[in-house]
Amino acid sequence: MVGIRQIEVYIPERRISNYERKEELGITDDFITDKLGITYLSRMGPEQDTSDLCCMAFQNLRGRAGIDPSSIQVLIVCTQNPDYNLPHTSAVVHGKLGLPESCAAFDISLGCSGYVYGLAVVQSFMQLNGMQQGLFFTADPYSRIIDPNDKSTSVLFGDAATVTLISNDSVFRLGRFTFGTRGKGSHHLICREKKLHMNGREIFNFAASTVPPDIHRVLEANGLTIKDIDRFLLHQGSKFIVDFLAKKLGLPPEKTPFVIEEYGNTVSSSIPIMIKPLLNDLSVKQILITGFGVGLSWASGILTRSS
Amino acid sequence: MITVQDIISIVKQNQMKINADNLDESSPLSEQGVDSLDMISILFAIEEKYGVKISEEDITAGKLASLNAIVEYVNQV
Image 1 (cartoon, each protein chain N blue to C red):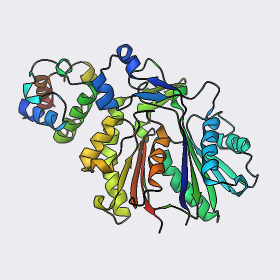
Image 2: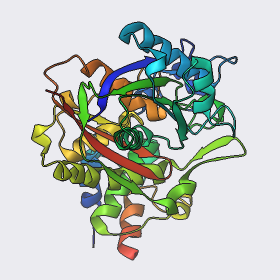
Image 3: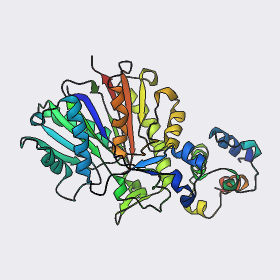
């Protein structure tokens, strides 16, 4: 059974500061610290495209894990900010990385739930086709669609990319997933005329009402309870929503990290960024992951350390 | 029928930095240290607890600006 073998991350060095913009946006220091939990937002360079962010993550992976590109059998990119409408960004990445023509490549169009959905998709695809090595990228640079004058969105999102090596020699294997969609709410987080619009209240209400029961569902589907989980990796939308969900579910704070202060909400990259440091932490045996957001879409899953 | 104390209890559950017992019942909450995200979670808790649906239009119109206004709104629904 294939699972997560390695994860590498690329976060661009350039930053913009929420503190430097607080007067312009009419927000206080306490709001930045206690509610957003985000001081800086990472920004890709003007010369970079989504595929470039993926390639940078891959270079980090190649350096650490000694990957042979010719062994890659599938490449998936999760993004809603592709290089082009067509071709798919995974094809562009495939070309930039010089992967073999035998390699399958396709995109997944999902946002904050994308990593969890994507793990289920890549595992299923690889298992069905007897594959041993695949790359699953997340790269969704919202800087391309943010209105800098929109107080509700311009303080949240940062650019980043991750790559997960999916292999039959896994560190974490994947359990049962739960999924959900509320298409009737799709207009509450939408990009129109190349600008992002978000109804913060509706998105909060959506997360507050769907995520707690979904976490209970995924635990039940895997025959687990909250006490069995060593880490709860909730999508890092903001400190406000992570704190709210952790409190509502009674999750131990030490097991429910919030890590995005230095770069912001990186959409589908937020969960793999948190998994990466846990790969070599042998005390962490069971991880619950839950992604929720644009769609409105949500998904949860369980990762178990391979013996 | 809900009371101001019921709403104060909900505000306290939010664990905000302000002392909910010191809130003035008739002044807008936004002028007493309750920020926009606090209001979102307070209104969510009210909707959950009392089974009411609070519309965006009513919020924008200021119908839930103060503790007294919230009590009147919920009791009328």
